[in-house]
Length: 314
Image (cartoon, rainbow, N blue to C red):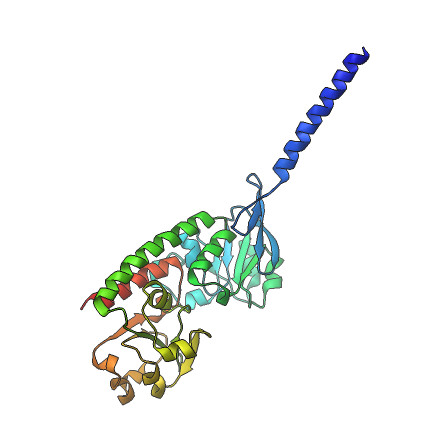
């Protein structure tokens, strides 16, 4: 009798140990290079963000993008945001083909609308003044725009929404397309040609570095076109620089990309402008400022197509 009881007791202990080990295994999160800690069966996961660990939905469905960009990144990943901030309506991107036309606009003064939309995730810039208020509505992840280049940006957003694999796949495909396009462009304009990206915005005129939208990611990074030395020195570090019409010749390259639609381009009627070699050689390429403002995958693909065609058509 005692022997039977002993066997029963040992069997019970064995069962408990097996169950305990299984439970521990299930509770041990798998940590990958995605910047998240998750359980395959969990409804939430931990995203290791700039402002600390945040519990976010494993597969968010109702995402509000309250930064001026990033919506295109979500669209490319197959996610349509439920809300955007007012800048994405003020600067409409024709490359999105109307995919955001019926999306709600949330401004800093209409947070009650955000509450009504019931988002399960909010993405915004780290400079947003309403981060604390957003966090009371839904898990809020912030990104510092200057911290990531355009490829890192897409991967990071993929991590946030649980689609890192898809984001990395696009990046790899993009690199292959960029390599082929770079060879095509170099055959047309040479390896040493330089380019300046210029845009009037309101009453100001700006030139841009290599990671500030306006096609700069395509021109300087993907296609490897060189920037004039003065652009590298004065602009690449800070991202952009305001200049006057008289200063344009100091920064001009063999090719000049000019944004249209965002400001007054009357400088193109001046003698200073007309005296620039690139202008005299008809090597000025105009682009749509609104659409080229963005540097998400959808915009980049269209920008690449436009830029390569413009540089190789001759």
